[in-house]
Image 1 (cartoon, one colour):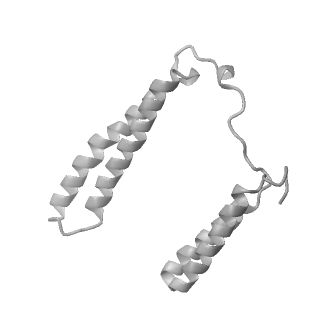
Image 2: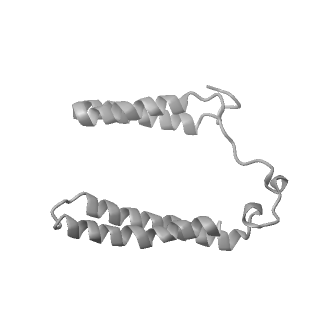
Length: 133
């Protein structure tokens, strides 16, 4: 994880100076690009900091070592819901919400309500037993 950490931490040394160059080149009149580049540098710093300290706590992974084998990283990665329809419902709710920002705020609130229903359904999908939809 140390390679990933240093790649993200290196983003700080790219995005922050580029933000100030961009601000200077636009005479500080363009109010979206400069803050966006500053925030991108900050986000690179946060992700890099997390990966760096996680790498120190966990230790070297098989893919970090030169002599690491593929079978050393075998096993369960996590629990996924292969037959779940809730991600599709959540994506539709997000699309309705973004449409509401462009068309009218009342449509946004409909999308937000559907998104809450979809999130609750997805989170509590397995609380009633396996494959209970």
